[in-house]
Image (cartoon, rainbow, N blue to C red):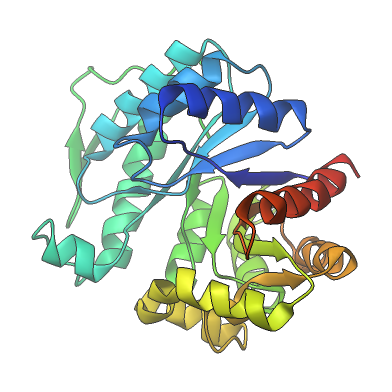
Length: 301
């Protein structure tokens, strides 16, 4: 199974150590949030030089604060520094409180913004001439766009129908967060595969995971750690589609056999990859080690 983990670390040394450990233990990927180490692309370039086959993905970089031509150039610099393929660029429009409240942009037409952005970004990463005047996003490369040394797949953070279409039609797939097996099987997979029209697409499914015998205690911990996601409309929508009252209900929690069955169910529902975000319950070291052992066994299956 293609099983990845959340990436990041408090120091460059820890970032490298984590990547080396993940590759050694058989995990296929690490997925870095936009705030990792200030800019995840810097730490990913370093981690990529220290590993050989591990995929390094962003989950996700926000589109609004970075023009697509600049995003393409940044990504190209990472694979150049890595000296190998293995970078996957996950992008998304983020959420209104950040885009409007922090950056001061309008979030009114986030779907159109993301579609135009994705069209420009993917063309630039293919090394194609870019001369686009969009309603919201424009780009005029004027011959200055140079494709990367290695292919860089693009995944769109897609939960609603429009962006699932964009992910299947224009990009290489999607990376999700808080979509359980029901949401993947009934909502995400059918839409993205229809939009792909026979092209191979990826569905990278991210969820919190904890192997623990006291399910109630673990769900209480998940409710505390991931409460914010239940308040954001984009995540609230996918939680509702999956029949989850909140993030704690979407999280995969239980003993070894239960967690293995739940992760297998994600693949059965249409996931091509699972991005597991282990969270600790009680003794942090022992809890994380127990969860990691189950995930590593699944990765080896």
